[in-house]
Length: 162
Ligand SMILES: [Zn+2]
Image (tube, rainbow, N blue to C red):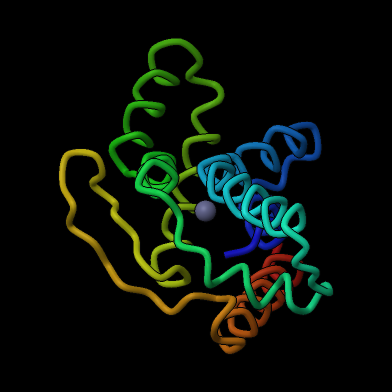
């Protein structure tokens, strides 16, 4: 799912104002794993621009999906979206900062949301290549709309019930 939705889900689940910057940071942290892909796409655009190829903004967005990420970029993404890595972070938090264990929940929520809303999730990476095919939220507007609908319903219910 997109970064803003992850931040909103984090703030929906942990409703502590003093923890808000931490919750938002952890909510979007697994998407650090997407940075190599972003740099590869930008590098590709830069090379094209140097060789005289010009694109408008709409063409840039359309071409974004056509650029195949490298094996390194894919593995980097799967590493940050792995339940194995989440478990290691949770154990580390349990050992050194039990009062921040709620952060682990936010990380887990990010991983769970991304499984159905991305093309391919490898939750046991790097120990297994077991994968789950989802419906990529940028390819299907219904995934995004259902996400917004659930955010509104859950937040309305929390506000009305508590
Ligand atoms: Zn993600």
